[in-house]
Amino acid sequence: MGGFAWVTLATNDSYSLGALVLAHSLRRAGTKHDLAILITPGVTQVMREKLASVYSLVQEVNVLDSKDEANLALLARPELGITFTKLHCWRLTQYEKCVFVDADALVVRNCDELFEREELTAAPDVGWPDCFNSGVFVFKPSQQTFASITSFAAEKGSFDGGDQGLLNSYFSDWAHKDISKHLPFIYNMCSTATYSYLPAYKQFGENVRIIHFIGATKPWLQYFDTETSTVHPPSGCNHLQPLLQLWWNIFCENVYPKLS
Ligand code: UDP
Ligand code: MN
Image (cartoon, rainbow, N blue to C red; front, side, top):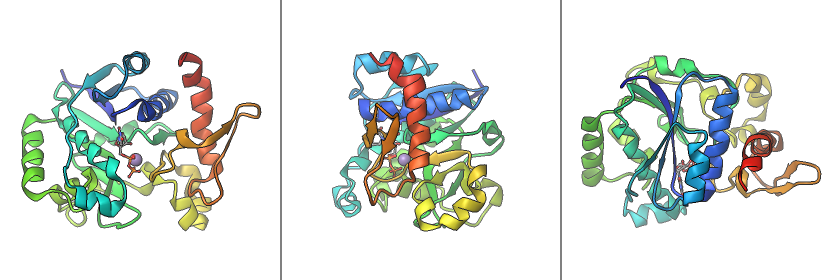
């Protein structure tokens, strides 16, 4: 019992590809801590075996759906209800503290120092910086907290239909109470920010620790030329090509050779 773990979630084989790259990125960055993944029945047996080769814990959980179709429709992201499944991470009480990281993220430098932070520590969201982005957050597993958040969810719902709205309502003092619970943006750099504020990316980009590919165009959905080993994002894609290339380099080196 005890110890620290990185935790992610995949409800299907597609997000599992992201989770495999994420796990290898953490290993390459030299983390000392465990890797754990929550999966749902939608992940195939073959994929579970691939995940088990790099995650020390592959835990199946049930899909918790927000059933909040009106709000989700507003976001035009009907699949986001699934992210309520994230709440199961609070049940990993075999660990003392964890950092949740979305499966569409990439760790580019060691960030084990995150485990020095307390629940709930996260970085601001680019869309509304008084909310935290729920793609990277430090939390303390606890059955009690799990019960409390799920009953809060059932009663109050989520203002955006997803886990981010819910968690921001539950941890509602995040914006103003304790600055030590605010992570610098470099721990959850939404790759679209390179597009909306390129000068800042040029100035600070080399300090980035975690890249988060938010939005519908995930790295694994991009066109990849196997002849030249380069990814070709479509014009208008909000993720910078070099960042997508970093993801694909790990995919080619560590994931693809073991897929078949
Ligand atoms: N997720 C999943 N299956 C889905 C959608 C989401 O497993 O169909 C998980 C996955 O870990 C993902 C996280 O929930 O990274 C949050 O969703 P996403 O990253 O797509 O949201 P965004 O960061 O783009 O808002
Ligand atoms: Mn994400």
